[in-house]
Image 1 (cartoon, rainbow, N blue to C red):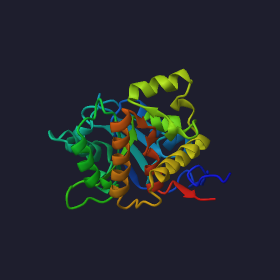
Image 2: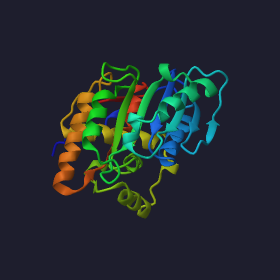
Image 3: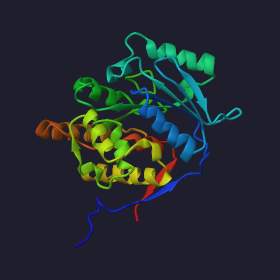
Image 4: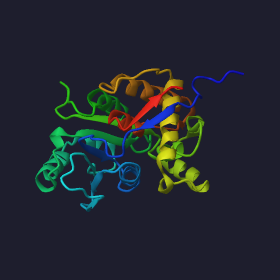
Length: 267
């Protein structure tokens, strides 16, 4: 029986571990897991200066370089909720000023990625989510609707879907309602982000690529990810409406593709 094109493994090509990518800002929901995962990727698999400033105002640099042309900074929104991207009270704007003034990090020139969960129990405003996808569709360029650049990348139902896809083939076939359930699922199987490495990330990229293609998206534009993002979101929302579960999928690896740190080559 012929192998389905959606189950074929593509060749994942990694860039040099210190490829010039400029300044990169990740704005994340969680205070621990996302920060730890990104640390693994950018200091263990790649070799970049990595700084974090969480919502508890705890700053820490890792893998410090002298005058780095490329570096990663990770911050939180004020609270663990996607509504805080809208920044109604100016928390993020004030934080951006701190990054520029105190940490010499040029936010206005950085690629910005928003990494959030699609957990129906916490991020409940569907209209807001689709609206943000329309606005936040390019990591480096703002648009007429929004005065800040950025690309919103969701995980269904949570960032733990990325962890799962590092170790489980056909992870998209797993259906789970919410992030807490997924954490329990992974814990029972002794699966965690602690052992993420180059080989596991290659599998995660493949799993994401297969999932996106199985939804029906053969190609997507990284310079304007809006259409693909909305199609994925609508697919998952429709599936959730029917089953009360999400199919495991994290779009975190889109950031690695966008930065040119990985390429997918069909074999």
